Length: 369
Image (tube, rainbow, N blue to C red):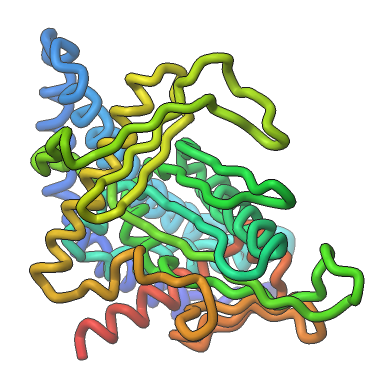
């Protein structure tokens, strides 16, 4: 007779899921969706395009969060049925399927459990991520492009919408910098633990001596701020430069000077945008990111946390938070948490959930101390 005793594992899984539902507060979430749905259904909603976009985006995020909870609960119920069927029919194939589904559900519940730790003021928001190459020449610009692909693949794995807002290509290999937005619930809280200096050690493909090369790249993560417009930026405080959007090798994306670079003169903050088709749209997108950075700067100054600013991420020796070893022992190691992955190829292909979860738990413990 087929024995399939997974009761203890399923009970533990359901207990964790119940805790998650309590933290998420499904009733409050449902009420919020109803309120936003009513706003979204107003006939004059699109009279104010900016407000309409905020309402529809918030509604989509809340609906996605509720659907994730409902789908997971349905899968747990289906697993009970599958186990009963496997035992009753003495079907080893169904038993294998039940074990596989249990393992997948444990992974999904684990991810949701980590999300419940994201209780910061802006953690639930979408994220804007900027990657900048640091010390290391061509290896550093190549590394920056590897990180860009890594985060885009991570977003793709999770089916998160991504918009690349700006890319500055290096003269040799890779990129000098790139900025992109991930429009998903808790994208900021999740990816904020990726902020810092990343270090790559490998045999350089650009050198002739087959020597080990160490290179660096900096990652900055900021939340998408609905209230960013509250930060007033006087015209006299900014310099606006326009230029032609370009791709690798100097190829034009379009034939007009539509790309925009805004420099905030008092702080030295620089934001470039070239994703949109018109100069007006690129300027508006750049101002939104600049205002967000200025808002965070103000809050950090008030809290005496200037060291957290992207400007002090030097992308060089001494302040790296993660190392990627692509020679000898293949390894990715987070220097804050000690979490290691022995398959760097999978990490660069977007398999980041383990590293991110360890980072979120580490940060939570650090904040509680």
